[in-house]
Image (cartoon, rainbow, N blue to C red; front, side, top):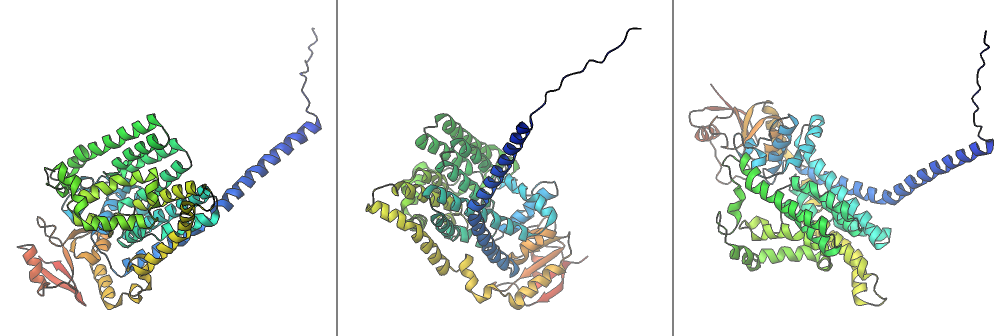
Length: 497
């Protein structure tokens, strides 16, 4: 028989010194990665702490107002209903604005649906307030870290970050509860950061979520395209953003919003001079004749020592100012409400841009001295606004901000007296809390089908009703209501058979 032989396959032996070298290289790579992580943590740590401090302050202000039923408008209730609708995997129906009213027929803000998973964990209007505070606090860290990198000093970065966090635009937005622009604030901060660091493509990509925040944000995306062309000579990306921004704005206003609107129209055309038939010359000239407009511009630019005017980044603020100041609604002209929050990251990082460029001028230059002096001065301006404004963090100095008293207790008991899952009409104070658990309407807002409950607070209501069962029947002829709770001018009525 033929003898079979096994053929030995030679193996390549690695010298012991080779294995040791590989192990040493791997160990060095691990140490290098660990050192990089530690370096990033040390670099970002102070800015994270600054963000956490403002998160605490913002939440304290917002939740204290919520606990004492200090709602300045029905907006928190509206957004609560929208998020609840998304969380239930349905349409964002705003019963407060009318039976079956779809939120997408009012403003184009589908980005609010991102809060739906948080609703599954915490189904409360307070969750929206905390989410907005977190988004604002995130932007504080972005502004602070960017200022450090551009100006080359951690102290400078923290000073500007703190000044931004104290800015009156953010504080007023916190004070006026949740709005969809909360998502735009950190995104705009990141966009401006990428521009200052020369990351043009990243800035362009970060701008795209803005078209989901509100219909006018498409104009801001187009403005970013102009900035890319002016500052970076990025013609392709800039032209693309201009086309995308203007195109999406036109589609949302002309097609998408009217599709979801009960009247199949964009309701806010009527806010322009001339109503549904706007007159271009009046739109252009109207802002210059309004004292409130000049006052707001002074407030906006004054917090940066007017340095922001010297940066191309300020172009990003023009679309927002244009639609606000051209409107016939006087609420949009003033420094009040939440409309200035999206301008804060733009203006402060525009100031950082200018300070960084002027700091390179020779010693003794007046422009250089003024620019560097604005770094601590911006914090002083922010602190002065905080102390002087009776809202935001400055409002915490009022003892009344911490206690609600008997009336707050009565409102809390009234909300508890309304069962979950029913239809209820309510006055302003309890509206957001009821919207979280019930099908909530504004008083008189569900005339086609009388609600099962009414929750009425007549405190401070000049000429308010005294016969509340009769008032309820007058709102809903043919329906009769009986009082089931009454305390300290707060009354809950239930529909009877």
